[in-house]
Image 1 (tube, one colour):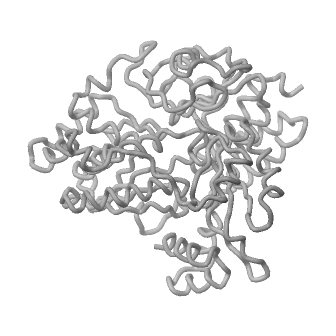
Image 2: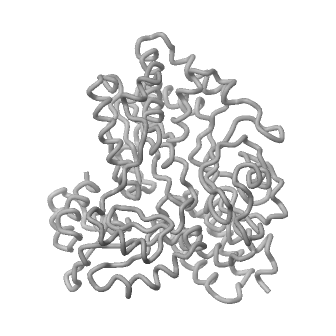
Image 3: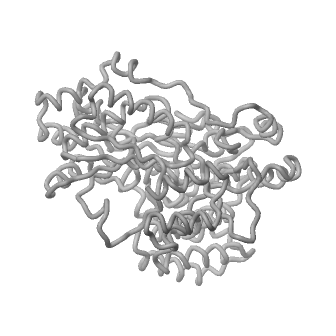
Amino acid sequence: MLIEHLHKIQDHFGCLAARHLAALAAEMRLAMAEVYEVATFYAHFDVVMESESPPPPLTVRVCDSLTCECFGAPALLGALPDALGDNVRVVRAPCMGRCEEAPVVEVGHRHVTQATVESILACIKGPDHSPVIPPYVDFDAYVAGGGYETLKECLSGARQVDDVIAALEDSGLKGKGGAGFPTGRKWRFVRAETGPRLMAVNADEGEPGTIKDRVYMEQDPHRFLEGTLIAGWAVEAAECYIYLRDEYPGIREVLLEEIAKLDAAGLTAQTALIPAPRRRRLHLRRRVGLWSRPTLINNVETLHWVRDILERGPDWFSGEGRNGRSGFHSFSVSGRVKEPGVKLAPAGITMNELLAEFCGGMADGHTFRAYLPGGASGGILPASMADLPLDFGTLESHGCFIGSAAVVVLSDQDDLKGAALNLMRFFEDESCGQCTPCRVGCEKAAVLMSKDRWDAPLLRELSTAMADASICGLGQAAPNPLLSILRYFPEELA
């Protein structure tokens, strides 16, 4: 409950004073260092030491992710302090998961998309800084459309666990969070473990350029909730935790309301769905806790497709893609395209095909130069390599991967070295700090990449150390954009 207590203190006092952290550590019988590390890791907590003044009552957070940087976030950061005055604080913030409407700013908890100084001022002067709740398929509408019938068939015994898992295996559904591990196989592995078992839904979606989970949760939240309950039933999980990023406050309100309706309808009776939508700092730990038990971890989009696969059959999902691949991906497309957004497209589609058929081509006045095929850690490829199939296993030999299918398109007007530096600063900020190769490596890489001339041999040596010695995927993949620039864009180093 540490993260919840921190939120309650922040909401009441507007900040986290040092005395609050000390009192909370004593109350929870935790080390002060543990409370402090959690409070200082997340951008939405404001820690104020004894000699510091509390922040102003209103904070404006400007997203500094790659797409927002391309669309004018630095100019907003420069102009807003003078425009807003001393009673409003302006700070940088990590990706807000709205890259298709860059640049994005958060006023209180209300997002301003395609933001300008004028639109931000108008929002500040408005009466409401709470999150906007978009129209969505609520419980009644979802049930009217056949929702939860598949879950009821599972609970009643009309569907058997082995048949459900076999259908997922036959469909070829893989984890949509980035790793691409076969979903049915994962369920089977967890079910084979000795109980008690738990389940966690990864709704964090914190990697710059990734927006698909937000779109699915905003539009049709019960589809992934039904998939969650079916998964919990299949592995006999006693509890399920939803790990939702703080940048999605509107979705949090929706989930709390709709899960309450599920409880009232008795649909969570056999699988307890416990919303834990505010996250705690996570890193690898060797101690008793949630991750010491057999735990099924699935991404939101992965669970979103479970109902459809079971109702339509596995062949529906595994239908032919492009270029010899099967299935489809939800591509989160942002950057220099006419029509950004979530594009449900065949697996194996090429970047040129995705751009022409689903995105309306390049934005006016821009020439296609480069693209990120898989988010911040997926590397950067030149436009000359835009005929490669986009799917799991097709890009690794080129030093890239599709990951969560977050595609960012860059043009002749973008600074590619600057783009790689932006991504490295993201990894520097996201590093949990537990292992030296990642913690120090990201910091040193960012310093070296900030120089006008890159020391290519030293950067390659540093990248090798990070990839070989970091204990988790963040540090291992952080050098990918940097190495892509060295490999495919040598003209940038001149």
